Amino acid sequence: MTGSRFMARRSQLRCAGIALSACLVLGSACTIGAGDDGTPTLTGAIITVADPIGVADGVDRVELTISGDEGVQVTLDVAGGGVTFAAPDDEPADGTKKTVVLTGGTATANLIATTAGDKRVSFELDPLNSVKDVTFKEVTMETVTPTAFRYAPGAVVHVVCVGLNTPNGKVKTENTNLAPLEVDVTDQPPSVGSCPSGAAGYARFDWTTTAPAMTNVTLAYIGPGDAELERRTLELDGEDFPGYDVTAMTPEVNGGFISVKVDVRYRAGTVSAGPAAGVDVVQRLVPMTKLGPTFLGSSSGDSAATPRTDVDGKIELFYSNSPDGTYALFLTPVGGGAVHAADLVITSGTP
Image 1: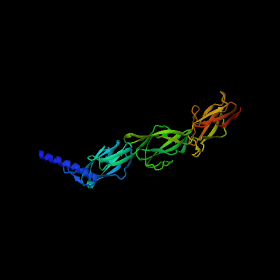
Image 2 (image 1 turned 135 degrees about the vertical axis):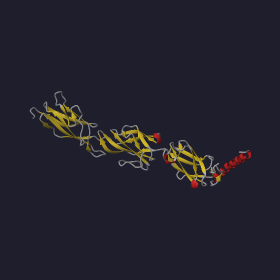
Image 3 (image 1 turned 180 degrees about the vertical axis):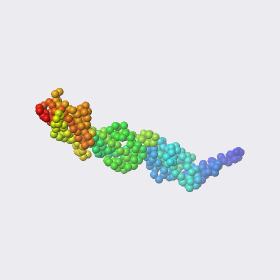
């Protein structure tokens, strides 16, 4: 390039930069200059944002619209930390700069963020004009009073519904009384239990509690790439375990042994009463003497195994039919108190 052509080109670019600032200040649509291939590179484009509020979950997108002359190419800049332009089709983010071509006089770009706060979008060559501010809110997690929905051995199982302001990501906990330890957030509330009103997303945990049913749990919000973006400690207050109702049938003598049929049911609380299935029951006879009746086993196992109720909450216990005496049978279901269930009366010559 000759000296005169170089100076002319330099003058043209300088004028283009001045004119660009003027176009952006006025908000007008005008094309300034062109690249070597004839594609316009500077324009009096403007940025508009229909909804400038997003959630910093690494997924939620705030859409920008850029308007100007047909075919113009512009580069956008975003500042504020923890924010990038989103690539189309869920590809990796484009970074803090994005170049678009105004096909038909418009183009769109999307912002995503992993940190909350105000972000600022502008044109790379004119950061003071046509500036737009976008705000990303932090991910919020909250609960309402957990809902008791069933009993387990010595415990109450509650539904804990976590409401979030995003339908994306996961919620994770290290509290082993909650299950599972990691839950995908969905846009539908669980079919059981109460949830915070106005939530955009939901995560359900089952919380197994014994008395006292109050605890603090720490929840972490997990975004793209398993990155922890937020952490909250929430207080849970549930129902105490109400205990059992234990009923024993009259002991039956069967030749050389005595059998006792027992029915164990969960006592009614918020949850209706029902069979206590799979509950370990500790048995003992009073007075307990070395010469007292021998525990022979139960319907769930031999004498070395702790008796356990079946699916209907029932169990049968077996004892030797000697020596003579009256023995009080106490049964203690796991998580419950001792119950005087029956008396074994043994007399010599009992057939």
